[in-house]
Length: 424
Length: 105
Image (cartoon, rainbow over all chains, first blue to last red; front, side, top):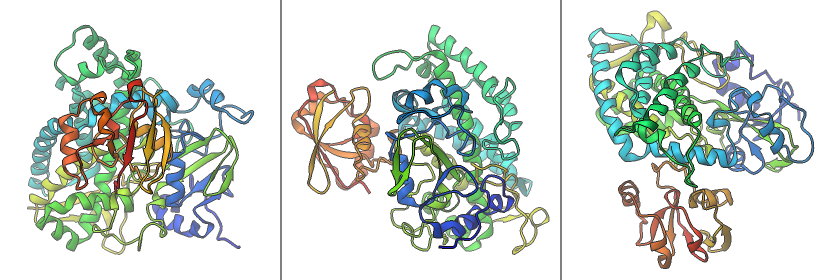
């Protein structure tokens, strides 16, 4: 069969602007196919994506942070490259981050992290989210509008994580400053060397967290940092302090762009759909379902990646050991085989929360419950305190001819700026 | 590793070795039982890893937290033997236990 020409997902600007149109143009190749412009296999089908996510036996997550486009730091040898992956793990960009872990190390780290996002823990965090949302929303409404992403969303999600982890008040401003100045993950402009040098926020925050962990191990208090610092693995052993530091700093990195951009994607939709906006304002109980549908149709993570560590298959297609696999979440969440009229926005879809915006299986986003809570609460405040939320046409142009600038990332789907007019 | 039996939604049964360092949810999920959705990945937020455990072994399992209890209360198929499998770790004393999977959608 003759297919339309494949554009390069990683460098083509039209793909960045509208990844959904791009994936639809590739849909006739099936739910899994070999790319003709990159040395990788693309997974765009819902079933096929779930299959890969659940197959931790044959796929490693080691390439999740650096993406599937970069070559491996070694030449795969033999039928099983598990040992090679572990031997070279630190040579993968972000290979020592939680999203990149495999097997027992991953299971152990998750066992510590999962305790942070339980309902009772989130309840305590919710008080902070409520209070901060109320304050910032009132401030923005009073001045008639805001640039949502940098002025509201980014500091909001950063301080929420800081509160969740119990970062002392006096250090929070510094954390925010450091993060504000960092590029997003999967930056297309610095493909390959999206650096983790001594000035990167993860490294700076790591220094702080190392001090917290050492201090709380010596002088435990009644706070979350003490609990985290003194947590043990399922076998009773104590994690290396650096492992706790990696987990804590990872939460900032992971919770930062994704949640802020999700809020941006949600608000762009609210601002551009007056009927939907009215419906949500009149009945805030619909907000959770609205968020789920935003996650499905325009979640903030477009793709992730896996490496075949053994010969395996996806949807019946043979995948040889050493193959890099791109899982296009943005495509799977609009797979017509799984979703009826997938391009339509419909908050009443059956089994909606089974979308893959937070992935599935062992690596399901641990912060998903937090993302849902924080986005819901700030949306509640924004809707309750306004009679209308609109795009600022001076900045974004008139309806039908919008100028919206998306972050130059092959991982993140989100606006770099969203100027809103807020009318009380 | 305790060897248990899981009863699938279609009525079939299969043996399952459970790593005591992992959770029951992880063991069932990694065995490829797709009816166990486990949407939240084990952080006690979605209740889609709901199972019925063998009452004969109930006292060998870790106690139920208030969070787990509250989440189970939100399900319409909660029974006397309901647990969220992400909160359950099994020790050697659970050898021979049966776990029944339930509709989690």
